[in-house]
Amino acid sequence: MIKVFVKQLVLTVLLLTGSALVNNLHADPPPPPPGGGHGQAGNQTGGGAAPLGGGIALLLTMGAAYGAKRVFDARKHLAE
Image 1 (cartoon, rainbow, N blue to C red):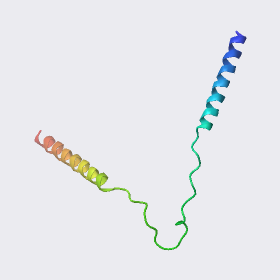
Image 2: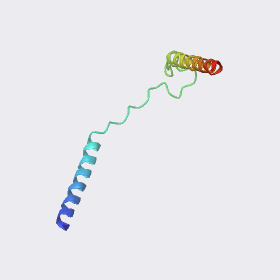
Image 3: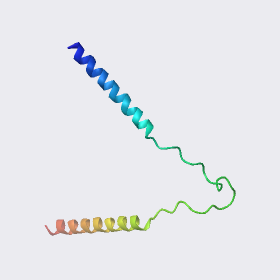
Image 4: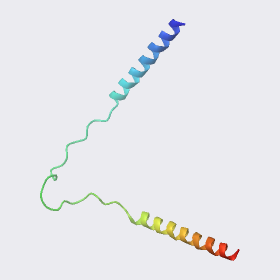
């Protein structure tokens, strides 16, 4: 009984340390240093151009649908 437990414990430790070693070997390299444009005074070009049009249209459409449902339910409740 003890031998089986020790074998399982040793196997588990070997698997965990082996997988950690493999993960470290396949880790991403550090990013390259930033370009020369950082830290300079004045306006910097590029970056920060997130598309907002699709998200705003989706939110407005969902809000209109929710409002229409509330009006429909209110009229249905008054009719009863």
